[in-house]
Image (tube, rainbow, N blue to C red; front, side):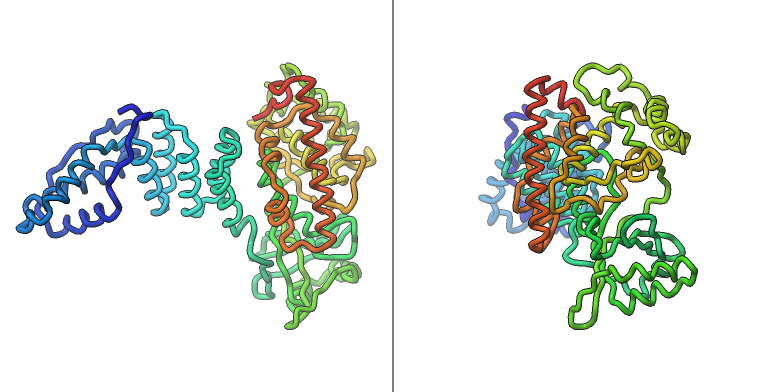
Length: 488
C-alpha cells in the first residue's frame, strides 16, 4: 500500500484486549506468517504481526462460540475493519512504537521510527509521537534531540513544541524541583579546592571526587546560579562543546561543618578564612548554604583559546581545506601561536582530540564563543600570555567549559563583543535553537523563581540574544546562509 494513502486501523485497544483474553480459553489459533518481509530485523514488525495474530484469535473465538449469533453484527464490523488494516501504515507503526516505549523497549521503538522513515513517512505527528513516547520511557535527552531535529524541519509546529517542552520540563535531572540536600551521611568529606578568586570546594564520596562545590557567596565576580544556568542553556542550544552537569544543592550548617572537619590539613585549616564570604539562609529549621554541585572532570588540560590568530581564519566563510584534516595535526598551529605556554601539555591535547577533525573542533569553538557572548562570560580568555589556557579546557572528545561562574553578570561586557568578531561561521542547529527560545519559559528554566537581581541578569542575556541573531543575520546577508551556517 502506498504510504501516502495508508489508512489508520479501526482496531481499538479494547478489541485487542478481548482477543488476548479469549486466547487463554478459546480454540487454538491458526498461525499466519508475517505479511511483511522481516529483514533486516523481525523486531521492526513484531508488534504489527502480534496485533494481526490477536485479531485472528478473536475471529476464531467468535465463529466457534455457542453465542456466535449474538455477535454477528460485531463480527461483520470487525472483519470490515480488519480488511482495511495495513500493518505497514504510519498509524500502526507509531502505535507499535508507543507500546514499545511504554514497555521501556527503547531500541525497538527507535527501530520502528527508522522503519517508518524508510517507507517515506515524514510527518510532524510521527516525530512528536516518538518524542512523547521517549519521554514516557524516561529517555528525555533522546526525546529532546528528536523533537529539536524535527522542529528544525517544521518550525513553529504546535505538536513538536509541546513534545519538546515535555522533554525539557519533565526531566528532573535537567531541572530538579528544588535544591537537593546533602547531609553528613551522604559523603565522606568536603575539601578545599581553591585555585581561583572565589570559594570552591570538592565533594568526596566513597573516596572519589564526585563534584566541585561552588557555594553562594558575596564575591560578586562569580555566582553559583550562573553555573547552573549556563549548563541548562547549553542543553537548550545543543552546544557541541561539553558543560559538566550542574545541580543545585544545599547543606545544613552542622552538616557542612562536619563534612569539612573530616579532613585535617594545613590547607584545609587555612582555607576556613574564606568562609566569611559564604552566604547562609535561615529557613526555620536551621541555616543552609546553597551551592552548585558541578560534575567532577577527572582528566583535562588547558586550551590556549587566547591564540585566536590560529583559529579565527578557519571560522571565516569560504573553503578551508585544513578543516578536513585531523584536529591533532592542527593543534601544532595553535601551540605555535600561543607562544612558550602553548606547548605545555601539547601531547595531552593531541590525545584528547583523537578521532576529531579540525572542522569538529572549529564548530566547538564557534559554539563556545557564541555562548560566552550570549551570557557575557568575560572570563574565558586570560589576560596574560603566562596564563593562556587557564580558563578554557579540553578533555577527551573536545572542549569542556568547566568554570562558568562569571556568566550572566548584571552588566554588558565589551570584551565578549570583540571576541565574537572572530567568528563568522556557526552551527545551523545552534542558531535554530537560539531563534526558538522564548522569554518566559527560558527564564523559568535558567533561573527558577528568579529574584530581582537574576531578572536583571536574564534581561541582559536576552538583549545579547537579539544582538547575536542580528550579527548572524548580517553575516548571512554578506556571505550567504550556506557559507555562514556551515556547521551542522
